Image 1 (cartoon, helix red, strand yellow):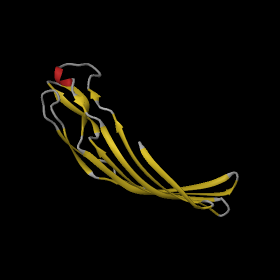
Image 2: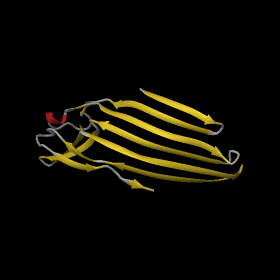
Image 3: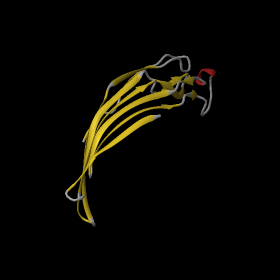
Length: 154
C-alpha cells in the first residue's frame, strides 16, 4: 500500500514523492529434510516503510534526460536465513532480524547524440546500518549472528 505523487513543474521537468508500506508474509520452516521437531519453527512477517523524493528532467530538446532520487527504507522483522550444525547435521531456516535502515541517493543521466547512439551515466550511493540478528532456538542451540548489510559506492 502506498502513495505516489508526481508534479510536472513545466514541460519536461517533474518532481515526485513516494511513500509506501509493504510486507513479506511469515510462515513455518518446514522445507527440506526434517530431522528434529525444533526445525519446524515459525517466522513473522517482514515489513518495510519506504520514502522517496526525486526529480525528472528532459533537456536539450529531449536529447538529455537527468533523474535524481533520495530514498530511505525502514525494515522491521527482516527475514534472514540462518544455519546451525546440530549433532553433525546442517540445519537452515528463516528467522526474523530486529530491523534495518537503508538510505541513499542515485542519479542517472542519459544523452542521445542521435536516434542511434546514447550514453548513460549512473551514480549511486547507499548505506545500510549494521544490524544484529538475535536468533531463537534452532535445533536446540541459541544462535546470535551479526550482519552488516552491503554498503556500495559507484
